[in-house]
Image 1 (cartoon, rainbow, N blue to C red):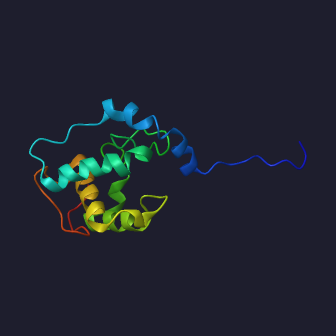
Image 2 (cartoon, rainbow, N blue to C red):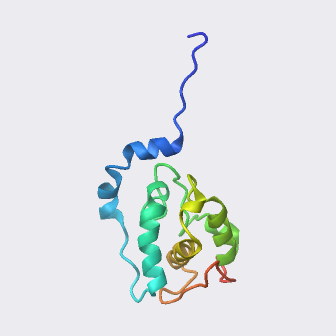
Image 3 (tube, helix red, strand yellow):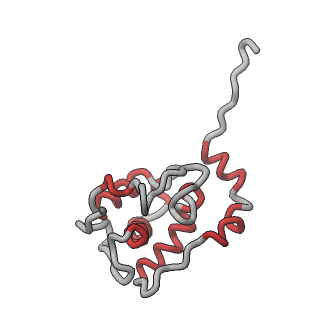
Length: 137
């Protein structure tokens, strides 16, 4: 049809349209916090589910929106090198709809949880606000 444009729906709008059923649908997929997890990592697990799982999936992989794994086999976080590098990326760009909506301690807890899930930080460990030189393999 000449002169007719297809409407593209912004990814945030697509997510919002399905957000009403997503939390209950994902509840069975949420991994249990690791045994012996520090308060920071426990908090990071909850915060990841609240702020990140909608796009990245409750297990950090196989999500419909961003299917590339963010930790574990074939992960993307290794390119950041350290906890500080990962934090800086999260600080600048996540959540993609408004990076300013969550503060540094929240983002740091999420990074700590991601590092535990990737095997780079012991479950009982923690990182300082803003990350540190903890290596990501």
